[in-house]
Figure 1 (tube, rainbow, N blue to C red):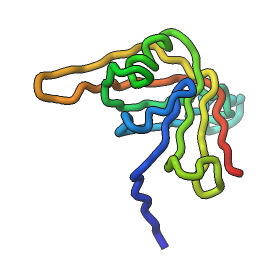
Figure 2 (figure 1 turned 180 degrees about the vertical axis):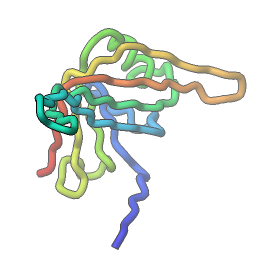
Figure 3 (figure 1 turned 45 degrees about the vertical axis):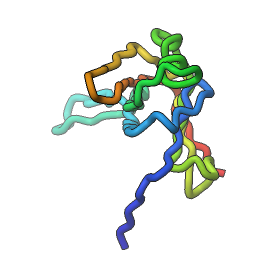
Length: 136
């Protein structure tokens, strides 16, 4: 039987600061680079796993208040940090609500957009880092 999950309260923590109240979209892509290992005499390409290069992209509302988006992210540009997320802020790190983490994820840029009559937004991407999952 197919199931669907309606996410009403996902959790996002960047550099030990919860930005759950500012995040409205999150996309994680686990990417392990393919290295070609084809040898003579084989009629098709063969690949082996290379380095992991995962990304976490987040769309956040722009807030200049203390401990919110801009204050949390401005010092992280050009550095590596830890980001973690789960499908719910209630009981994270369980088998039914695993907490996923990128440790040492790099934030290259902090572009933000503001327009008259619209909520300001940030679209950021963390790249690389060591991926782990907590499922107690």
